[in-house]
Length: 164
Image (cartoon, rainbow, N blue to C red; front, side, top):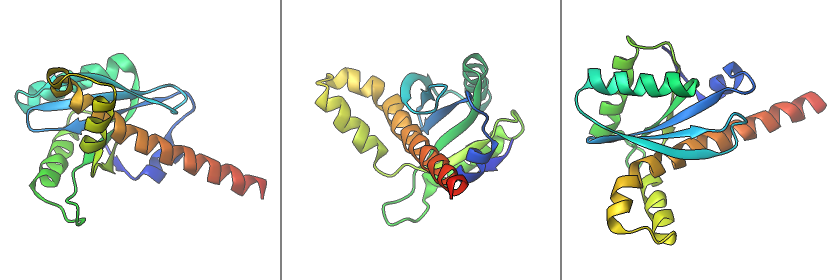
């Protein structure tokens, strides 16, 4: 497994390969998937965290079933840009995954993704109980959508360079 920048991922992906988004929480892991054209992110299930070995097996089973080419994982930076304990826990999770998979990971700044997900669920008039169930996968979807938008921007820039 490798940790890539979004630019390195853009160069490595083949057409028609989907990628997944992860929102790593202390109690759950929210999941989302891109379409094969990598334009849209769709919230998926939430993994209830148990212990690392079990969490990794469930995550890798999901990745195999969905034919995931890469994983974009939210990096919960502090609002001032500093890295706190949650960033360290996320990096440790990815380091531990290194022994279990060859799938590349991309860190994505997830500041305000949960706030945006909460706001979207409120706008859809989702009840408080349902919001609690869906917030992590919705946040994963916001994380992945940000990465998909950046991949699209990189592809347009590369295309413009070829035209020049």
